[in-house]
Length: 220
Image 1 (cartoon, rainbow, N blue to C red):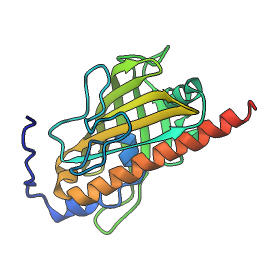
Image 2 (image 1 turned 60 degrees about the horizontal axis):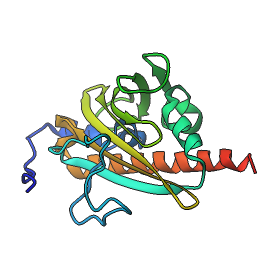
Image 3 (image 1 turned 90 degrees about the vertical axis):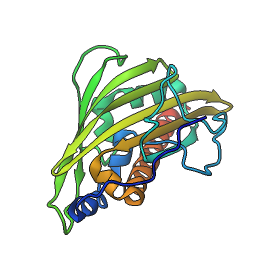
């Protein structure tokens, strides 16, 4: 039986709570923070459980989480290449302003990458940029990826865990993603932080679908 998740939130300054609200839509997708909210409808083939890659999933203790998925009508090879060629993310994901691989060769377990996304100014803080360093912890080629790592901005630190799964279905590929975020600032305003994460993940999946399907169309 899963442990009961604590719903209490640590007392945090109003500034920290305000800070989190305008996080760029990308933050959600960027970090990887998703899990199944209470009462969520199980995804196709998901049986309502958290997504996993080689048996590992998102942070079970995290209170900020989101999960989504879509069928992409494109070859799995096209989708996998787009998703794993992190240095080219800015070319199709507008919220990602830079991407850099910290290792060389095939995208694999142990690969690390650094990427950035802007955060607009708001009444509590100046405009800043969120700097994310992600490390691939689990990977199965053309099937799943799980990465983790910190996202750091002015007055903000988020620990993200992000899982992606890719499953061939009739006419395309079911791409699912789940991400969790942990950290004092996001936990100070869970609804706002969850909304930011959700927008980021939905945007990422939508951009991946649009880009992959456009590329696939070029071969017809």
